Amino acid sequence: TAAWKEPYPGWVDNISGITGILMECGRGTIKSIICDDSCNMELIPVDIVVNLVITAAWYIGISRPNSVKVYNCTSSQMNPITWKHFGIITTRNMTVYPTKYVTWYPGFSFTKYRNLHKVSSFFHHTIPSTLLDLYLYLSGQKPM
Image (cartoon, rainbow, N blue to C red; front, side, top):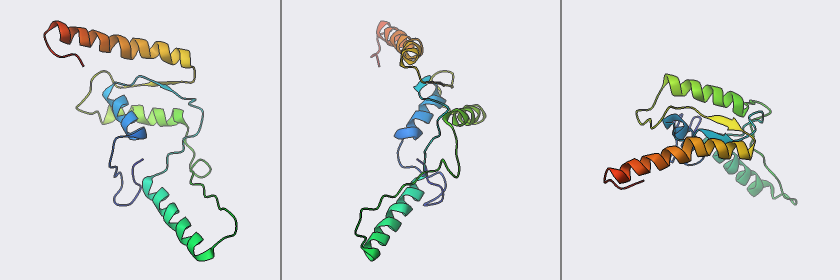
């Protein structure tokens, strides 16, 4: 996930994980996500995790504990946010700050039911991409 403070707010060096998923939701290419939207998210800024790892290594180095220590870096106790609330914020921001690389109407929905996700994916992903490939093929271009 993106950084909170270091090296600067919002810094991210790749588009994997939640960053890539949200980017594609904003472009309109992801319409259905399997997720129980009532669950809390555990997205921790990268600089917080790195600081925890450095601090844990330092502590273990100076204290030499006899037992194995387990360190957790979570946010749900102090700053909880559900996937549903995150989806609402994300959808609002996609409308207020749209990308210029929109492929289809931005927006997405969560479902915890695998079969419903498969049906939604078929209608929102498979059929449109097949029709686009057919159009490209018939117009003499290389299908995607």
